[in-house]
Image 1 (spheres, helix red, strand yellow):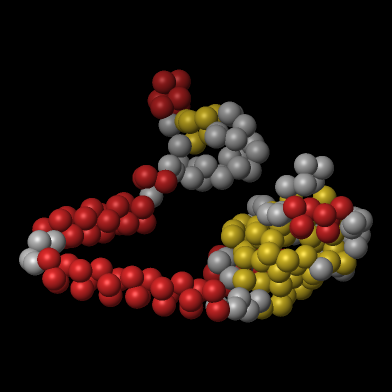
Image 2 (spheres, one colour):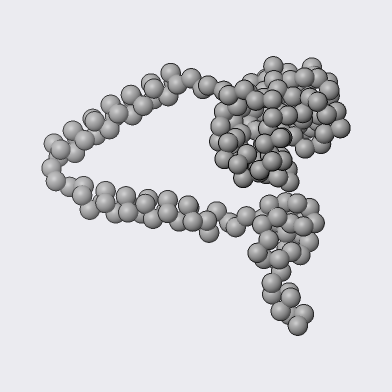
Length: 196
């Protein structure tokens, strides 16, 4: 009987405690235990498309030398046009107050993830945590000084670290960046682009 129980358990990637194989979140530390990237359905689909593309390019590549050079010229022109469009692309941020984000998360985490994840947003809230290594800061709702759960903001550049060095916990801050994740246990994750 003990062997059957052990067969259904696996160690948590974060804390090492045993947990059910079917669990997505560790009951001990709350860490997410997602399957490896190569076992995810979207990765398999991308790999199949890539392999089919390679096979197609190998099979259809040798008609004549003139058509090959013409194709190369077109691809180069397209690449140059795309590069110019990317440089001119301006990111527009949607402004949210952290209080609004947390209310959405508490009301329906799945809906909040659909609304915020992958979006470029500008948030305003109370600075709650400054990491001693300068890797992240945490911003919580302004209307609750005891709030713990909020937006985990990852610091990307030395310029951002220097701005954080001049801040104090309790300051009201405005941050622009891309929301990379959202969950009912750990709140929101944001990659910082700008800090005010």
